[in-house]
Length: 631
Image 1: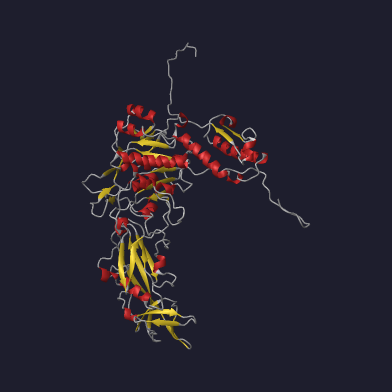
Image 2: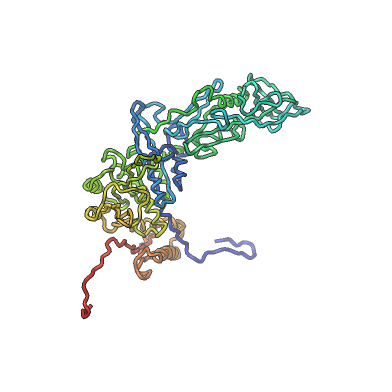
């Protein structure tokens, strides 16, 4: 309450209404899995490895690479084996089926040779005088073996020198000075009219401009001695343009880069590992810049080395990048963030657990193991993650090529109200294959989770979380791996295995909406997700009540807040009942709390809702009727 000490008029704002609860997002999805490139934690790597939010396949490809298969090997001596990029394909299927927001947590398993090459980070070392500058891929993966080229005509160097003509002038106090040249600039001194942009750079023609405390420019040549240009000399300011051919569809271009750390667009800052100018940059430069006093010509040495790298190194391409080993279930589950080291972030599913908005989770790589035991372990990891978080549901994949008995046996090992299983796998035309005349297109099998998660998101946006994500068309497939007819679904459905079926004239559809819970109260996916939505929204929307005076005024405010939220849900058709009283109740008073609860700081609010169950079995009872029959 405000203090009133001096006479006067006091105008204050007060609230005469209860707080409101805003519904949390329900369609935001999280995937963890193996990708071609992208943020992942590795020794000595950038700390910016949090899961990335992507809103389209194009955005995913820029951050995590394309749809091409991965190549795994246990160690450097093993033969690499090609593996379908299930994560990338699932992302494509997710957006194709209506998904909007997706967090991706990349998982990388290093090889086990025990050498520095285990993590598969591509590199290229370039001699710079007595030191070395190193181009490195920012993230592990074979996709980091990128060429770095010039944009000019007549070469394929990593850096083309851009000459910006500047002029000199005579200063009465300082002598010859160069206009626009700041501390650390590299200039080229020659006779007029000077070299063209295509002429090679000669170290003997270069000077590094250093500005002393009085503002006077000093010029240092290759030998480290002062050598000011003549007043009538042709002077060019030299900068670097770097072009990186990341993929056939993506080329990154960085222009106007300098080679001295004091320059605003210093190449080591624009292309640094942790926080580059382009957060999706594929490479970064490592170079220990020498002190100006020990080597005043250092910036020019780096410029010459980068500009001549093509001639000195042969094919200018980073090498040594690889896709590591196949990540196991424990890798997909990940590790928690280190409690004492802020740079050691959570990985895998644990990283997704730190993002509050996610409501749906999946492991697209989980069903792709050759060993069914690994498939089961990965599913257990995903279920455990969803159960610990409480506010999300797990979409499970069964093993590939699973028979009716095999998928039933797989399902029989789980019991959770926070997970749903879909069967069978889905066949598509391989999007990485270009069509060739006279040859049939290649087809690949994918786990259903990416497609189903997109259907979940589409249903949430179009109808709401209370609508069962079933009887919805699956987009982007050629056929299902196996044909599920009514007789087979009569076996699968009671056991909580949601079938994907083809209906002639109605397309391919999700034809099941059950969890894998043995508790009949949580039989349906939409009921489970509706309660997740209600509980999470109430959790976030009532944080204001913590440490408020625990009395009748607070209880009434809580009741009003929750009732208003549930009333909106009832009007949307999410709850049963012809009246609000039939649809829900909210109690928060002396009947829900004892004096002991109040003495221990507990406020207890009892909320009951009547969810709408899906019409899983639509039954018409038909009989004969005669004209004189009595109904």
